Length: 140
Image (cartoon, one colour):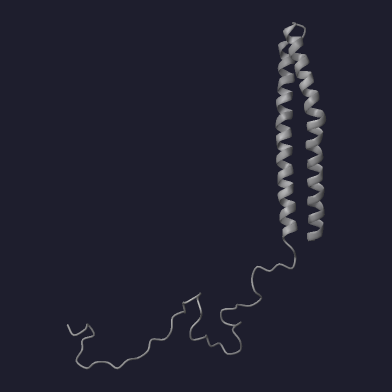
């Protein structure tokens, strides 16, 4: 399944790159020539204003289509990169919890769990002999 997605992403990337190249090498230059010809014709009063405005509108539309195609290339590249950087062998979680050694047959928890360098988890309070006659407030 991953291989199929990678092949699809590669195909999409190549297709979008080809579309951008087509716009840059053929569509946009041809439209710019038509636009400059329409401008010259309008200046010479041989082309009506509506025709000149239509050419300008078409030119802007094609420039926006080129930008959209360039965005598609970037999106396809990101998709392909994400697919290639992930593999089916990557696991994000261990197969069993590591803190309690997998909770084996005996469900006893360890007395203290390490919680990083120099720290340990809570432990059972140690009992100390109680002072008789003390209120627990330091003799107050």
